[in-house]
Image (tube, rainbow, N blue to C red; front, side, top):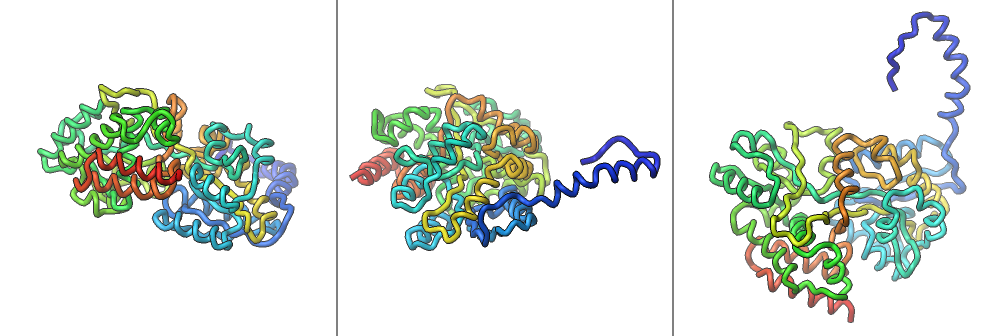
Length: 430
């Protein structure tokens, strides 16, 4: 911390040091309390941006305490992450502390007996968290809590290149119709309107979700997920799939939309070769460490003028922490989990560009861009979590992921896409 007051005399400096030294030594030498000892193996999908720098800083801070517990971290790439952790849990060889994405994964893992019951801890500490109901939903199975919410991710934004818009006489779109008009102007000028790398399915699914919350609304989407009052074959769901396919058919996405991965699409946008790029708040979380070459603009996902719902957005408690039931060192893992859920750790996590779920951490410590994205969430009426996390893997990661890519390529109609999701959902309940 920098002080604006200049100490003008050596005597005063020495006096201050003598007075403060005992307190400072006590503060820096006192380790975080640990009830156990040994190594805690932590697995996460934090491999880039502010997530990578944030978790590295947290581990460094913990290990520096010298309290008898050390953390060893295994970062796993997003595309391999789900498979790796499912295999480890099923094989009885999980880490001591696990980050995953909650919701259906919690239900699957807890239902199979793979997670430790944290209900008592959550009941005693839930008041420290913002949006505790959303956090509990991500971590609940049969009335018990099996994880702790760690990070929120927003999805209701599109990043844009102001220089490209200005060069082509385009104002920042305020409606979806203005967005389409801007895309047409850019295409006519030989500029790629939207960078998209949908190879792995989830980036195109985010577009589908942005249309779902407008065409159907979060409440209706959950009725379809729970098979209680709505179906994925209903008109609004088919229309959302049609909206996505229409963008591809109009030539508004980058040429490699179905063959490029997320990293390729991100690089295309950052190289100034596309005007728009839609993804989550994690894209902005790394700007403090590696700022883009141009000042990236952020706009809300534009609303359709004929949208049925104009209040809901996309975003979710994306990262949760849990202790596997077969953890080798569960007591030490609990020590680490409690610290990771503390105000101190939350402020470090937020300072590295992440939306911490600890009450007040974003407002106190996050970069301004993250504060702005978080404010959008707090103003919304409802938020739709990443839909694949609320569906069984054979539905979300199969029919939705692969289906949205097929919509882009034109190999699947919106009607067939919607029917495939519904059929798989019904089959999963049998």
